[in-house]
Amino acid sequence: MSATEWRGECVLCGCPEKKWASPYCLVHGVMVLKVQIAIRNEIAKAIRRGVIPNAKTLICVDCGGAAFDYDHRDYTKPLAVDPVCRRCNQMRGPALVFPFEIERRAA
Image (cartoon, rainbow, N blue to C red; front, side, top):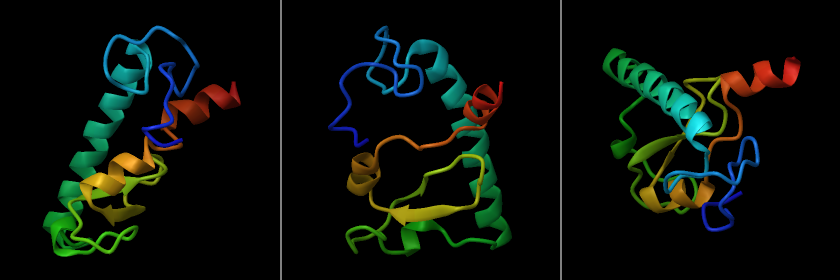
């Protein structure tokens, strides 16, 4: 689901109560933010170690423009990322899999 298709409910639980301009409800928004911060730290460490290049030195895999960020489709795989420009990153929408989502599905 792209950011433009989002209708106002949480993309993880379908809850209509959202408290901010985000595709997540407040509960999932906090969980997602914690995961995103941890993953950003992993990416920064990988860049410093030379495991992956800085995204700003690459081209966007979607449009071919200058990349700005790395995009995750699956937060359970921290280094499985695509270099994308800001516009394409927003068009891709939220990541599809979070670690707590897998635990919830297994229960």
